[in-house]
Image (cartoon, one colour):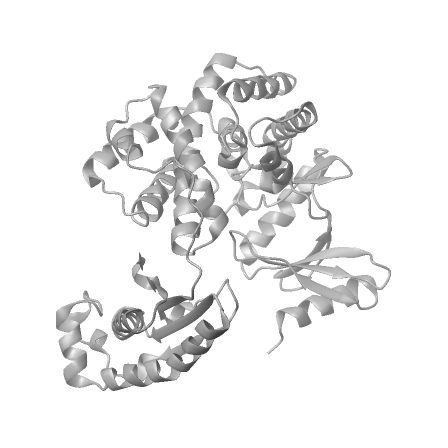
Length: 469
């Protein structure tokens, strides 16, 4: 089987007529795309991207051409593989606008403000000028940010933030609030290009010029969603005064391209800032609470504060979301003072792949599929390995406790070595066919027994059930 590096090497050789000297993988962020920096012997660099989602790649290639034709700075696509999964692009360096924004800590200097004015002017051209030439048939999963797409964003908040944060809510009342939001948004003109994730992490600085990346999720939508995405980015910590000032700079740029009703757009700006903030909290909940990516967790308090500030303006009646917002902790997270070994225990489905370990890339994986599967019987299909009926079945019809005892015996010497040597992280995974019965039983009991046996911190993640403890 051809590896990703082999595919990249082949594409680079065809494009450059020779090989590169060094291939450096870049850390992943919030997507499944993989990026690599290729360096030649004379220190020239290009970026390589690998993404199995060909439809997403096709959208990227097409949108990139439309932006370049409109005079918008985007990385040049240098080469594409025949199967469209791998491509080379111009290297923009490693300085996102985000670095300047976070360093400013809510009080940007005039240079940073000017960069934001430029970004907003470029955004207007993307939306209106480039938007006329975008092939919206390539947008995925849908061409339009319509009522269905808005509900997806709102449900992301419900299922990925509220449930992972263990915040109580009334399903019916929350849906009523969602319907009010959707009804208000559905009357707004949505015939422009919507970048979808227009925020400072996706704006690169090269020779003090702005370049835009990660726009393949774009679609046809309203003007104000992207403006809100940039100005309400949680880590920016902008004051309301500064947001309004930058909003007006966007309006000035937009007026050069089309007739503008400033007051009408300002009302839409607040509505989409609310929608975007709920969606962002969903992303932080999934990437932070579930995937345990630290910088997403650190962004939650600022995003929660944005939400409370918007709700306080009372521009739309959302009684239950207001109640929910009051349950969200907006204090900055305290430093983690635990200095011992953390053992992360997963249950998972082999159909969806073995969990990756962000800490040290290693650990143990135990295959539970040799045990008799209760999921083959109708009476157990809706249950999990935490339910008594499934536990009784496994104990009576398999050797699962013996299997678990042996797993503990295998892992225990490593735990003791890690504790003695001061190591901080170890991952232990239990997999089965669906990640629902056998693996859940083993992960649950392994975590409980190890937690009693050693002075360690145990994180238990039933990945396919969406449960973390």
